[in-house]
Length: 420
Image (cartoon, rainbow, N blue to C red):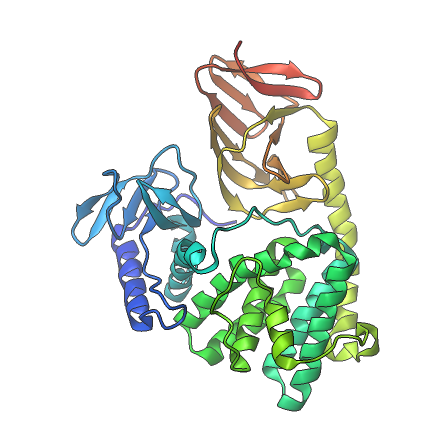
């Protein structure tokens, strides 16, 4: 787990922002037809001290030397993302995350979050968040990992073998989407995070180096804690590189409903009538993928059983609001129900503020928060709960209620309610 108590280094953060500007100036809009140099803010989550590359419209940041400094607003979540601050759209990054990175990794992060700032200008208004529940199924994970392997193979093999690898990738994609209803959300995930990863690697590396890095991420995907969370980052960036390699113009006129696989299939002009079972899957690591997914399944089911016990069978505190959330950790899907967030979450809403700080043991997290799929309610463990005025504490979480709100007993524990 990363050390979080690292004070903001204004000088180093300024250097990163200046170097990132130089990268954007060098690109001059060549990659996407517009500059990636957006407003950007780097935040210390412990003090909320922040440094930005330009002023906002409400006086939050004031000029100091060649940068702008200020206190990050208490009603905004702290995360590596893109959001509105003081009337402007900013890319944001958490300082302690950057402090653990090399300079290149820090620049990649800046490019990635800045790209999120301009995505709606490129693709249109972003749709609601996607839930790739089929990737919690063994067959769904095996199919997606094989598709990644086939795309990686196509990027690293001879031209003669490339066509077969791409047909297999597209066949697996079609079969998965025919089988699973939630697979229809894959396009949005690939465009949202995959194009951002593609952009950060292409901006910060040569094409060959970017290809090597993204292919390695595809190889490593078999070991990620949650493929459904990582899917878009890997698959979208792989397709971007493949389309580039085949000299296909793919970045023009993209929308959130665009399908990178369909763009590739149209260029190849190939039918997908051949079943994936008729391919020599051993060339793409099928046996190793199947074995790893099978081995991981028992551990995954045990983890899900533990979450079911904590959030569905034991007393909880329910918050019926969306609010804004800062997540510092890895989300874990709870199929059919929602997502468990750990270890550190900051939740700000009309009700007030909730701070969750789960802990590690040798084998598990203790604590956390469960969000339902539509982000309409949240649950925290409430085996123990103490109310002192407007302050409420539970197992590894604390809440400060705004005026007009209270905690009341409910069927499965407690709920946050507006006072009558």
